[in-house]
Length: 281
Image 1 (cartoon, rainbow, N blue to C red):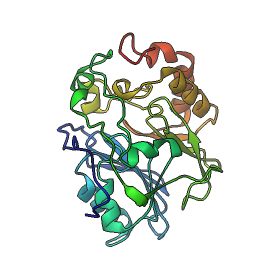
Image 2: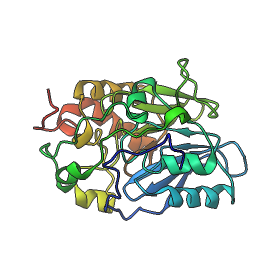
Image 3: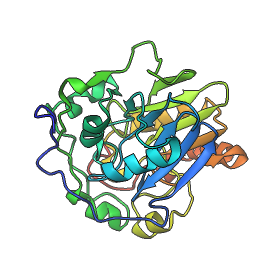
C-alpha cells in the first residue's frame, strides 16, 4: 500500500448487515446502486462504456467486494475514471485506499472535506445518546478518525462540474458533514443524495436489516448541524428529482419520491430532528 495513504487507528470491520447486502439495482441504464452491508455505492455510466465513475467507497474492508461488483457490471479488469466521495464518513470511504491502489484513479471530494481525508482532522464523535434505536447506541464503535489519501485526493472543481460525469453537477449539502455533496443530472433529474436524506430509518437496527423504505433525514448519530441539514433537504427537494439514490436504503422514484420529499421538507423537525442528543444546539 502506498505509504502516504493510511486509515485512522480506529479503522476496523463493522459487524452490521442488511437483507440488501450484496445486491445491485439498475436504477437507470447508466445508474447502478450496489449495497455493501448497510450502505450504498453508485456506479455511474453505461455497462457498455469505458467511461464510468464510482461514487463512494463502502464500508471498512469492502474493497474486494466493490471490485467484484464493478467487474460484474463492466467486465474484468475494468476500472472507473475516478472515485467521487459524497463525504468522508467511515461507511463512505471504507475501501477507498485499496481501490486507489488497485485502480490508480483519482479521488474527488468537496474542499471542506479535505481535512478529514488528508489526516488533519477527526470528525466529531458519534452520538450514542441521540434519540433512536440500536444502531445509534452502537455508534461509538464507528471510526471517526481521519483517513489520509495524500495527493490522491483533490477538491472538486469550484464551478460545480463533476470530473468524468458529464451532465452532472455537484451541490453542497452540508449538515451531516461540513463538505457533504449531492450529485444531480438535469436532463433525467437523477439525484445521488449521499446522506443528505436517506430512505431508511438508519438509527434502528431492525429497519436497517429489513431495509423498510421510509424517507428520513440524515443519520442522526453522525449529524452535527441540523439547521444546515434542513436547508440541504429544502435545496434538493427544489430540484424536483425523478429518481434518487441515497446513502442508505432503497432507491426511490416517481410520485413516491415527490410526495416523500415534500413531506420531509414540511415536517423536517418532526421526522428528521431528534428530540434529544448532544448535537441539537
